[in-house]
Image (cartoon, rainbow, N blue to C red; front, side, top):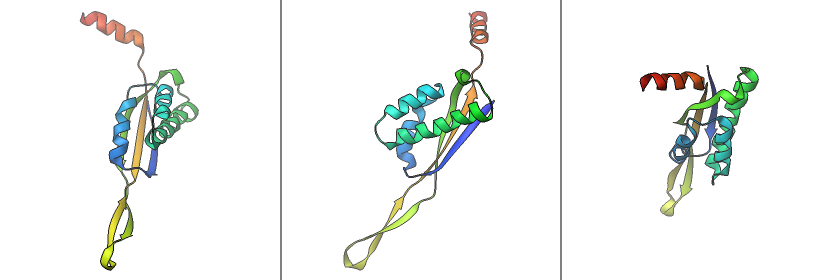
Length: 124
């Protein structure tokens, strides 16, 4: 079973956020939250907040066992641009684009470790 959480209109550019996205794939949500909160900058804290939301959705809404959850994927998508203007010389203005980001986090339930061990033994 998969559980998703979406955070929209985050005031960080997607390019900066993508650097932090791949770090926590495959981890349990609680270890991912600890790692992301320990990072510098606001990107880690925003991602940790989204992972916590997905974790709470899985535990409270879908009644899944917290110890069996893992992060399947983190999708970082472009949001709309906030257009601002900066005054420059000769009465002109230059456009500034404040980029926003949408983050989608998908949690899945881990398979049993016993079945993986049996498959490895059969292959060997």
